[in-house]
Length: 248
View 1 (cartoon, rainbow, N blue to C red):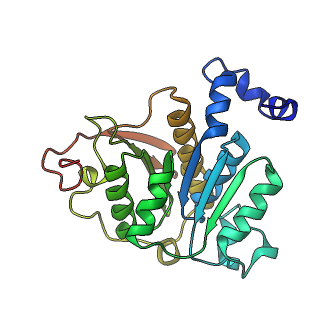
View 2 (cartoon, rainbow, N blue to C red):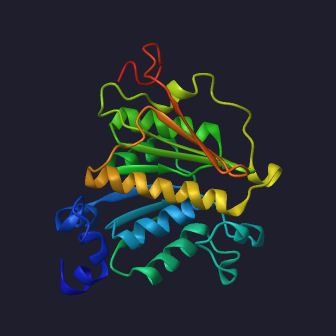
């Protein structure tokens, strides 16, 4: 790292769990972020400021005025732009020292698998179960760690799935019946800070995975009730009959 990088990341380097070695791991890492909305916005911003060397952003949507209430990576001047273009420009304004790739269309399964294969960590910041299950299947197949977050109204949740760990369950172990009803923020509303909290935690878990520090949320679903400001942790195990990871 050069002198500017040493200064920029000084507060990370001071942490004994990270140090220069850990910061170099972040610099060398490639994170795939699927969804640049409420969750992907803070996640991408914190990963960019943390010095993750390469981010690939995937989103097929454009910025709308109603997004600005919670999707903090975008600005009013970006309305009408593809979200990945808006995100890329605003991230580079924060940290020009990183590489940002953008994909502004929905990936088919082959293309998605290829992008997941190229990444060190995948962040699922999407908003529908079909996409989440497809991402999970390809992460299991390619043994790529997955950090999954979701939020609606006043509630949020996050977990980490890593098929490199033989006992670690996958997303399909948690939701064997394809999940609950596919609620959306546009139909049910969302309190802005809730996605900020969950998205920030996604960035945190990604950094822990890259630097190999702490205890990732393997086999644990962390649930937030923002109205009472209570957290619950639900433990769950690998399903020996899971159609996705039991054959991996």
